[in-house]
Structure formats: structure tokens, C-alpha cells
Image (spheres, rainbow, N blue to C red):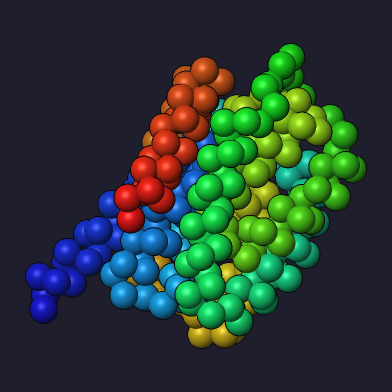
Length: 248
């Protein structure tokens, strides 16, 4: 029994480490953690809710790291985070009522959409370090919040796409805002799952430890390697998702 628990939490920790890195450097980490927890026996809604503990911990860590490295915009982060929070409350309220088998089908569909978005999305030209069209971004982030509150998996890719299409902001600057926004909207989302009894705390805390460590590694990678290498991570992450979708 003890051996089984050690194996279970070891797998959860490893999944969190990988997810924390990918979530900060690109996105899609929840497509590792949520299926892992479902595989280990958690009901889909509880796996979705438990994942929010790790997401919150990871993004608190990453916000601090980006701030230390000079990438921090509190004003824009709060504006986008508050509009996303309103959407996240709606999305989370839908998620807790969704049957498990429906959630699993939606998760699979999300993996396909992420792949299409990455392969056929608009090429980034003339990227800038500044953030433009904040009111339009705020409106878009309400819908990002609905999606993030509902499923979370792949939100990083959606945030990158929104910034690319609306603001043309560089990936490093986008990532620094992304982690702040997700940190903010995860709070109301987590509260909804807690109130509905859809959080498994021990698994969540182990996952959070892995995500936080992965976030430190991912933040350093994101800042030091810049645009070119983040694109490499994006490609590898999406390819891994495609393989998982095809074979499992």
C-alpha cells in the first residue's frame, strides 16, 4: 500500500514538474497533469479542480521570477486578470456540473484544436516588447477566462494567440503577463471547485510542489532563451499532445 502511494505521488510530482515548465515557457501543461490524475483514479471533475491548486502555486512562483528579471506589468495584468476572473467564474461553474465522459471528450477535442491553432495560426511578424490595444485585450480575456475556468488545459496557447493577433507582443513579454493573469483568475475558479467538493488536497499539494519547481525552470528558460527557443518548446509540446491523442 505504501509503495503504491509512493508511486502515485511520484508520478503526480513528475507530471507537475513537466507541466510547470511547459505552462510557463509555452502552455499545455494541464494536458499532462489532468489526464495523469484521471489515469490514477480521480474523477474528471475532481482532477480538473485539483489541478487548480498547482496552477495557482506555479503562477505565484513564476510571477515572482518574472518580476525579479524585470518583466512585470501590474496595471495591465490586473485589468486583464479581473475581466478573465469574471469569465473564469462562469466557466468553472459549468465544469463542476459536467459529466466525466463529456469532459474527457472535450479534453481530446481541445488537443486537436491546439494542434491546428499552432500549425496554421498567423505568423508572428514585427513583434514588440510593449503591450498595445489593452481595452480590446480586456474584452478578449473575458472569453479566455471562461475557457480557463472551464478546462484550463491549453490556455497558455490561447493567451499567446490573443496577444499575437491583437497586440503583436513578444513571447517573453506575453508570458510574463500570461502568468499574472492566470494567477488572478485561478483564485475564483479554485473557490468554485472547493465549494463543490471537487478538490483532492494531498494530490493537489504534491502536484503544486512539482508545478512550482517546473515554473522556476520554465521562467529562467523563457527569459534566457527568448523567442526562438520558446517556439521550439511550443512545437515539441504540441507534437507530444498529438502523439498522445493518436495512440491513447
